Every structure is written in structure tokens, then in C-alpha cells.
Amino acid sequence: MEPENYHYPYNGKDKFLLYFAENPMKNWKYTSFELQFSGDWYSPKKTQLIAAYKNCLTVMEDDKKVPEYAKKYIDNIRKELVAKKTSTPLSTTNNTYNFNEGSSSIVNHGNSSTNLIQSQRSSPLSSQQQQQQQQQQQQQQQEQQQEQHEQQQEQQQPRTRTRTTRTTTIRCLHSFILDLDDDEVRDLFSSDECEEMLQKKKVKEDPALPDNVEKLLHDFNKTGLDEHLYDSEGFWTTIRRFQQPKQSLMPLSLYFFFCKSNPNPLMSQQLEQWYQAHLWTPLTDKMLSNLPGVLCVLLESASVSSKERKRQHGWHHLGRMGSRNDMIIRKTRNGIVLEYGAAEDAASYDGTLGKKRMHEAELKLPKTLKDMMMKLCDDCNWDAAIIRNMEVIGYCHSGTVAEFMVLDNPSGYICRLLRTNYYQVPDTIAEISKLLDRLRP
Image (cartoon, rainbow, N blue to C red; front, side, top):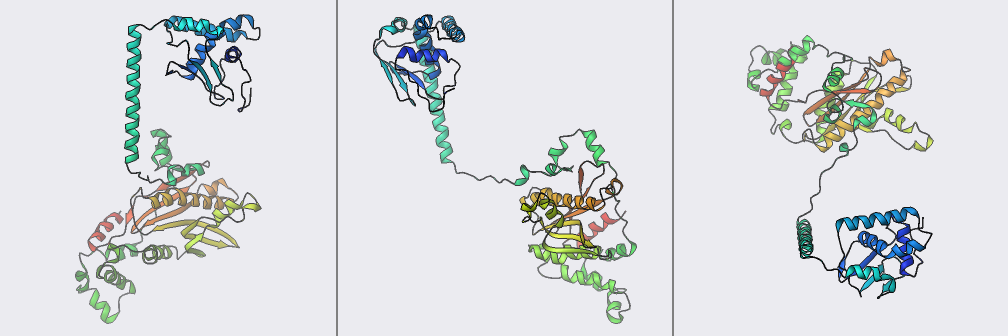
């Protein structure tokens, strides 16, 4: 094989065409061989075949360097030309051979070795063949005009930038996380297999609602604030004597803050930190306050589990940090940091296909939970009995909308991610009764 910058050293036409006969199956990317006959241009491949056949027949009989496969190749070309009964309208005086990449050019004007070609060129085309050629030329012109018209339309149209997200190419499945709510993941399995994975026993059942909490929530079941203020058995007795417990004042303070303030902060757009301070962080802190040693770390704290996973490949990865989350549920015991959950917050809810929600709820948060799960498995020395009863939780908050997820390892091969429905904090008193109906067993 010659290098890419190889130029053919042959100076004679017969020797040059002999090279085509010796290399019939060669990739013609090194040089383009074109023939111009009476103003009509032919494709390089067709002209190579015709020239190799018509100009090398006499040379092939005398030259012993021509291999047998080249002779068979030329014979096949001759049979195809005879079967199709085609003849090329070539002129007898103007035959030009051009090499776009080569340094040499060969011009032939009536050489004696081309008598065979000239004798075959003199046969005129029939009227039917001329009509066919004219029709083909018209079709080619129409196609070229259509292509030019389409190109002009594309140039005139304004370019629109499509919205792409990282989630379209990178998914949780790459981290061995089976998200059963992902349609593309469910398509990989049959319906029976999906049902089998969904019906796996959950690690922990939902706890029952305590009686005192249920009673406190039902105190909010009012049609308006005035109904609660003028309640003869509740409000005025509490204000005058303070004989009832302090829990009875909590519904009243929340009514004033959320329902009598103008404008209502829940019905207007707020910052992400506002939702963290007034809604999600107080709920999580109060919910986990009875667990000793458990702390909710806020304000974009780096995950220790993700940091250890990124640095486990050696000292040259020490500069890598863990993923930053809006909240991490962390516990420190004997100098060992263990993490049990994380949360991601957003200022507004832009739908299930929102860019921020898709990135955080479908990629960032599940991968962080997987790192936490692996850290817990390493802490228990990978005991299968303990791992089957272990889970980590995740919260995805978007304004007043919340989504909860649980990551566990029920079978020991791949982590399973389960999601809940979307829950929204009521912004009016009328919506509170609907929420209480869902809390009832």
C-alpha cells in the first residue's frame, strides 16, 4: 500500500491505465481520475472502468505483470457493457486526463494505442437513448433546483436553540440504580418483571399517625379564620386564662401568618431560602429531633459519602469534593460520619419535565443516595442481613411541592429507587380539609 501522498510515476498513458488494471479494487481516495469527452463529465468510477477496459486489453496480453484477478475483473466489465449494450459518446480528438492531486497530467491527441477507443466512439446514439439522456438531465436539473431552494429556505429561517439536558444522555441506570418510574427503564423489562420488582416487600412500612398529631391537624379544619376566632370554647378562653396547653395556640399563629397576611406568602413567588427556612427545614428538624446524634446539615453542604467515593482511586484525586446538597441528614459516631438522606430545594415548580427538577430528582439526588447507601454497607461490613433492612431517603422540594424517594437494596444486586406522588402545601384554608381527608385511614 502506498502512502497518502503517493503520486503515480508513470508518464505513459498505457502504463498508467495498466496501474488501474492491476489495482481494480483500490480505494480511489489518493487521486481522482476524470475524463472529459465533448464537454460531458462522467463519474470517476465509470470512466476508470471504461478506460481500464478499452485501453488495457492489448497491454494485458503482452505484460506478464498483470495478475489473474485483474484480467477477470476486466472481463466482467466487458460482459456488463455488452449485456447493457451501452456506448459512450466520446469525441475522437479531445481526450484529456486530469489528476487533481497528482503532479503529472497526460494529454492524448490521436495516439495510435487509442484506435480501439476511437472506433467504438464513432457509433451514434439512437433516438430513444438520446431521449433517455435528456430526461435524466432534466431530472438532475430539477433535483439541483430543489436542493438550492431548500438551502435558501434553511438560511432564511431563524436558528432556534433547542433545550437539552444532561439527563437525556446520563441516567441513574449507569450507577446501578433501578428507577422504576423511568419509562425507558421499564421498557427494558416485561410487565411481569416490573410487577415483580414493584411488589418486593418494602423495607419499612409507613408509620401510623399519632393521636395527638391527628387531633392537632384537625383543629385546622375550619372554613375561615373568623370561625376559629369566635369559637366560644377555644380562642377567648385560651387568651384570658392560658389554662389550655400551648399546642392550642399553634393553629391560631399559623392562621394569622399564612391566611391573614397580605399578600399571602404561599400564593406568591418566594426565594429558595424562604421555603427552606419557613417550610421544609422546620418540618424535617422537628421530625428528627427525637433521634440522638442526628443533625440536619444545611446550606449546600458537601456529602462525605460522595467525597470518599470520588477519592478512592488514589492520591491524585484528593482535590475532588462530594456533591453539594441543600440538606443532609448526618450522624457522627466515634469519629465516623454516616449519612442517611439528602434533600434538594428549588424556588418554583416548573413541572415534571423542568430542567432543574430532572437534573436533581432524576440524576443528582439518586446518585448521592447511592453513595450514602454504599457508605452504610461498608460500615456494617457488608452483612447481607443488615443490608436487606437498610434504606436511605431523599426529598425533592420545588416551591410548595414535595416529592419523596426511598433507595434500598432488596435483592443484593442493584439498588432500587421508589418515588412517591407529588404533595403540595395548602395555600388557603379551603385546601386544608382536602389534605386532612387524605390523612385519614
